[in-house]
Amino acid sequence: MAKHPWRYDHLTWPELRAAIARDPQPVVCVPIGAVEDHGAHMSLSTDNDILEGVLAACGERAEGDMLVVPTIPFGLDEHHMDFPGTIAVEIETTLAYLAQVATSVARHGFHHILIVNGHGSNQSICDLAARKVVLATGMICAATTVNAAVNPALVADVLDAERRGGPGSVGHACEYETAMMLHIDPARVDMSLAERDISQLKLKYFNWDHPEPSAYAWQDWWSRFSRVGVCGDASAATAEFGRRMFDLTVERFVELVREFRTIPIRERVDHH
Ligand SMILES: [Zn+2]
Picture (cartoon, rainbow, N blue to C red):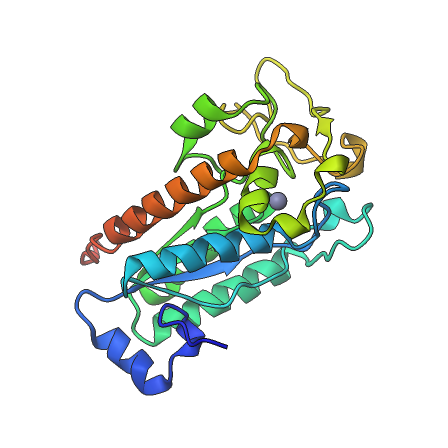
């Protein structure tokens, strides 16, 4: 197996020490995904596959400006347990584990750390884990994603303009995630089983169409609204849309990383 210079754990400890001493220092990415249903047409590994596929391409492109810790493969998933195969870890355990991984990185002297979430339901845990790192170490730690079905902010303009499935098509195992997998690893996708399943509610103040913000967040048991573990229009996905979204995400995420590491660590002021 090749040694990838962007993989945090492929380095030796003297190489890690040299990376910590570099100026500017690389940003360390801590990915966390999930093992859960992604429709009848895609593997349980989809969230982790998208995370790892995108971050590998970002690592190559960033030329030393980022390091990637191995993906934490499991997350908050009790609400998917009606679908066979899902692995569910409790909120408190996920938060503690993720925060301890990121805090370990900070304790070695890395001062800019990004938690990269690949599974929507991990998001509030990722935000809290980042906060725990800041409070415990004083370093700069934030939560983000490279999966537009988790949060489309990085690529919302193009996602919204170029998707084919229309409103409601992007949610989970959807047009976007299926397209990404058609680009990353088409052998993991069976388009003959890809369904349009837009059964999540769309109300005046609540919606699940990710390019459009919702006024409130509410997470239901998945089997209450999704027939096959799809929320969106998987049948609208194409490899071409996947390649377009993948390339755009890689380009913009590397920019994001380079911007993120310019955030200064300012002095606290005790006003007592
Ligand atoms: Zn997913």
